[in-house]
Length: 225
Image (cartoon, rainbow, N blue to C red; front, side, top):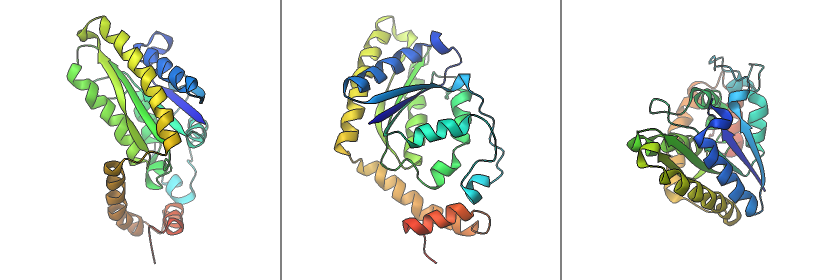
């Protein structure tokens, strides 16, 4: 069982969010997972240019480190997303990774995978859940399952990070249990089914230049001639 943790803070080893990620990965490892941490702030991942290559050929046309990360994500059973709160959002590094991933969304390539999200903030206590929701929503939009998230704001006091570290470890273990059980989340599955029922018309409208997407949808039985 493989779990990949995505670290997206430009502060790298000085990141408070990294403390949560390390703890969650430790929990996953204790439960028997093979773990790997990927620091995308150290990688070269360029902006999406909306060239449609991934839709047409199933491969991104940009030559950088994105393909390496994609292969790691597709080979994982569980994914732990982590990002500090930057201007009520994830970091630019993680947002760039998300923007490069329309193929994952269009073809629901995280089907059967489980995700956990982690964040930290300064004074924005109300923004913690908002940022967690961005990452969880991405996981669900890609066809995967989101088991929840952990976050804290420094404004909550020095004890908050200690509690969040403990909870992150517990959630890392919970992620493995969800994978083992092949846990179902009916509300998330309903959202995905509703999206496919709408998006099939987008695929049909672009079938002449979204060849890979269209063929994939046909193979999955989501689209019929």
